[in-house]
Image 1 (cartoon, rainbow, N blue to C red):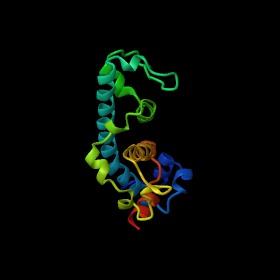
Image 2: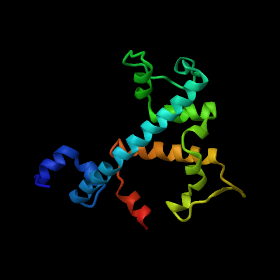
Image 3: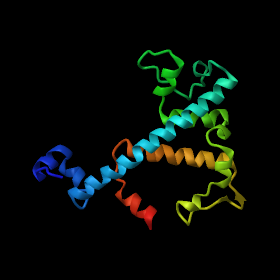
Length: 168
């Protein structure tokens, strides 16, 4: 990067940069974010559309009949269904899945049947107490992990340490 160090500090703040060993490490963090942001966006759109399709099968106007604990963002005053679904947060979709117990629509069954948390970290458990995880439990965990990773990625959190853990 061809930027003066003082200008870089002015742009990003010394406090933020203190969390990194160098400006180069800070830039590597942005490179990691670049790699995952588009993938996370695709995952979010696909999951959102799968949930919406399932909900529309149950009730075409489901968006306008939500329980009180699920907030529908209509801030831009758009009432068009497609616009509304695109405006909702990933957390909204997680809440819809949980409330309506439609875990089976978020991912393909063959994906869930073959999914292993051990693939990502060998100390992960495939059981809850003495029982293998059910697919709905896998969906719940995957959605929560995706939401957390997405929130960190889109808020430019530090991914350097996380990548080190994943690669160990």
